[in-house]
Length: 271
Image (tube, rainbow, N blue to C red; front, side, top):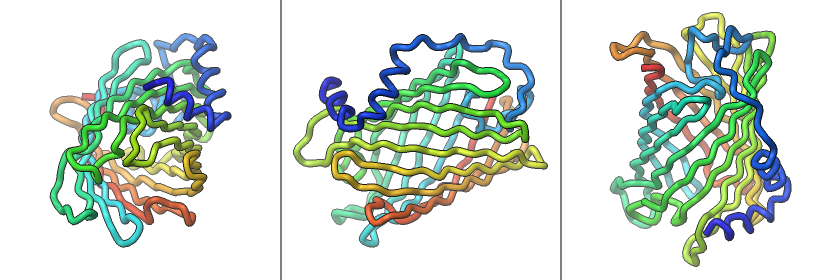
């Protein structure tokens, strides 16, 4: 199964070489004492925008997507993040979805995923993050999932700018782990340019996510832009803080799988 996934990655040479380099080169030690940083977050605040900061988090996210051909999907995702120590973390994601295609209007379980992450090389100027996420083929109906188990590998390089902003470009490679005749295989490369400006009011947050995508299976190219607006609405009785966020999304290009979307997010961080 994994050998077939690696073979598909070979059709994306830059991604394969890049992740192989990360796997074989020794990583710098993780800085346990982070200290005050010139990024968008200090050690006293955590609003979830710094990819190098790992905190215990629970998140409920409602996502609406306007698909092609006037179809749509809506998904409620429950996410739980657990720090594991020494820069490691685990994220569990449970989606409940509804897609109005194939005559089905009811909701059902989507593809459940588990993500493992590692932060390394962290200092006052920035840090590195590697993540591996596996989506299991758990959807209760074909239109609610990919019809295949998928591996999603991510490398993030975060820069803490002197202005207090964060610039964290990332490279993401998603590949199918199984062969299936009924559903298209996944082999998608994404280059994302994540940016977090520093806000005058630390209770507010905004992030920008422009990205470009290339599908190695069919040669499709498309781009998207997502903007997240959020606010800290106060401390949680269990510790940490509550946040509410809205994230509109627009996709561009003739090969785009979706037209536009929006996410409504409720998040508890640091409890």
